[in-house]
Image (cartoon, rainbow, N blue to C red; front, side):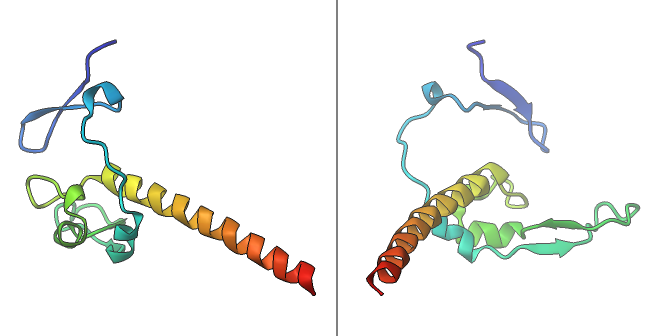
Length: 112
């Protein structure tokens, strides 16, 4: 199909969501370090008082301050997809660092 996914937000507005590069411009890498400024929290929702479970997530206002690209337009939510992209960027950079450190360690051990 050549049409993008259509969704309705919590305010009743419609928006399109797509992963295809056809619909994207001005691509820039995501800074994975932004995830280090996020504070994961466990909480009980005031809106779901009849459900006795706990959730895990972030505080929208804190996400907006640390990672504006992940802030939702309503100021009360955040875009999980943006946080996932930052997490993947951070994992990738840590993988490169781990490989480098592994090589250094192997060189040091070989020199002994």
